[in-house]
Length: 183
Image 1 (cartoon, rainbow, N blue to C red):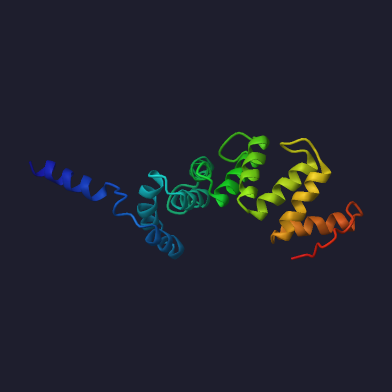
Image 2 (image 1 turned 45 degrees about the vertical axis):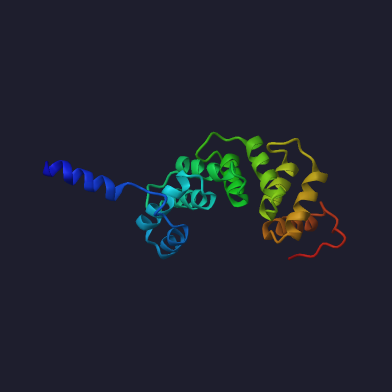
């Protein structure tokens, strides 16, 4: 009888319950490096579809914070948040698809994820789309479209896109755009 009671108490104490989970506490625990506490707060929320919790668990899995480092697990959490339209998760999932991290390399999928992130206002995703369009990765090569995405990304604050535009201009592969100023 005593062992059954101990098992019941252990199960109740260890059972993740989203009602007790707190996103703010999970975020604070993660920032403080208290990964076990972050995991116990975030996992129940993510399992119920909280996009920020999914995104944070993706980062934890990607970096091995409080769990074994795993691109497969990171991809799953990023994809779960991306499926709900979270712009940063769309970007991260696109990067994983483009590089074949956690899933087989799929540049078409990456481009589509970047496009959804760009449509949600993510400047870095616009920059990635611009590079892919210039090089013909995941989409038919199109210099005009690539430059358009890169200029939008640079105007939105993406420094990598601005540096690429500067390099292209230095190589005389790009005429400076009217109204473009480096962020």
